[in-house]
Length: 98
Image (cartoon, rainbow, N blue to C red; front, side):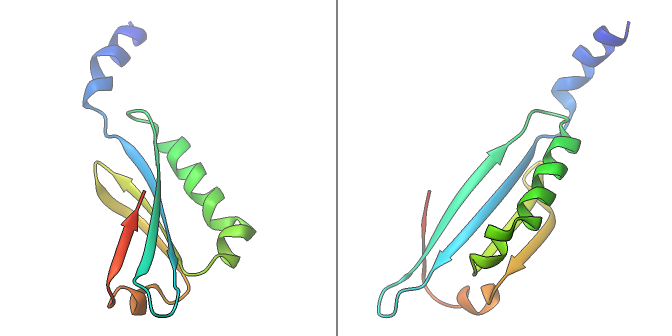
């Protein structure tokens, strides 16, 4: 009965996604924004949250400034973390790659 219930409910569960954006600043050139997306199965909220916390707590993430990390549920941002002067960089022309 539980398996049948899970099969019926799963298509209606939300999708989760962790998006990491690195900004590269080179004087005289437009700012490059590299995005990497990590998608999770429908209803995998625990896995997505664990991965999000793991990325935020990583030493590499904290030393690679400026960077921002988003946890999205159905395309809407649930949680957001910024490392470095991200708000000041968003005022300029940004070329996104990836």
